Length: 246
Image 1 (cartoon, rainbow, N blue to C red):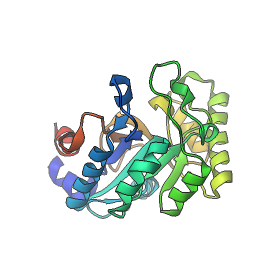
Image 2 (tube, one colour):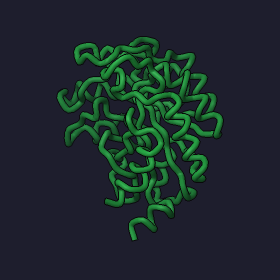
Image 3 (cartoon, rainbow, N blue to C red):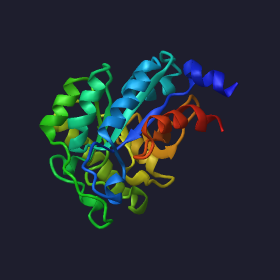
Image 4 (tube, rainbow, N blue to C red):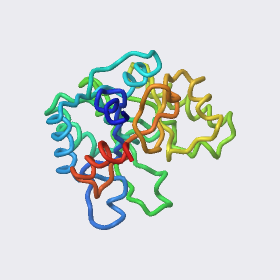
């Protein structure tokens, strides 16, 4: 029964990526990174299977309003807005007429992922406002990811609220579009954080928890399908069609 509903489109895969095609010289470089060629093949797979993308916000809207989306609808999301996404992922998506959602850290646009400096993970360039405007013009959704990428669960509510709201306002001012959805930096939130995101004017949010979005879920705690460096095409197939049924 679960598999029948899944293939009928009652479940919506929201793919989670960060970096695509970033330079790889060692183990640390594989962290949250996917080879450009693997990403191209993964998108080719989805197109061949008859899947079509929708911005994350449209999936949130459908889930909250009880509307049905076409069968084989999925979303592609990118956390942080790395420059390599514009270079490698955007062309691979455009070939199939696909769009994506990118979660932007407003205070880091055009800079680097400073939040990873103390972890040993690579520090890489992030897209600036012009590149984000270009993707938005292509139909991409630009979404919220705070002002500075903190661990929201560790902040006092007032500070967390300021991070969420300031990030939203800054991106909207730069791009001239309303931000509808949000992603929790580091996947970090506490029991009060989703209410703060809602109060900031967002309609939904995604986490780093694994799973497929489906009706009845809290629209501010939606899971995603995490795609790893090692997955390639076979790994994506497993995450989409095997793991959810186990």
